[in-house]
Image 1: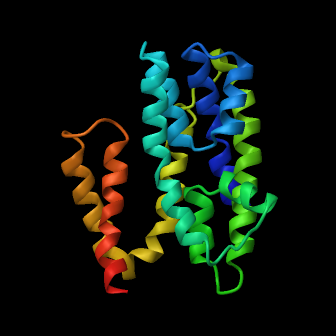
Image 2: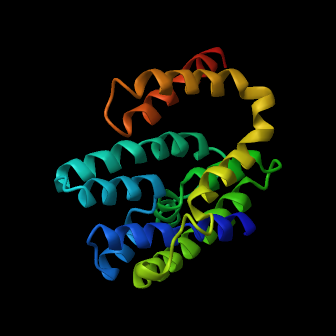
Length: 202
């Protein structure tokens, strides 16, 4: 829950960025409610705010959100869900809920997944509303919210690096190579390829 609150507060940055890009408060809130993948949302408002087309904004958003599909494959066994619960689980399959679920003690993975995902979802959406409604009065960088997501995810990832550092290093190298050669969003997907050798060995 503490992770969810901390990361969720970063939604104020998105609300403010969406407002600066010309989104109404309702549009900003609808984006958070329906899309709910921070990086994808920022990519969408970034492209639209810079004068890009809706198609380019959506394409960037989809590329960045593609990693959540990989998370879903990973979580299918540890967080079983059917029917409406499966739809809800798909909506909150994000970096933080996946990280907590995969680092929780055996048998508690679903608890970590649901509490983290739902807490981030609620806080992110409330914060989006606050950020969009008071965009002119909030400077997310001044209060450090611009680094909250990265810091929280690194904190969750750090203990796993002892066993998975080759995959992390491989992903970093692939992303660095892809950055100058591919459009925004693609390096994240390319980095995911680093896990394939580990999967083949397993």
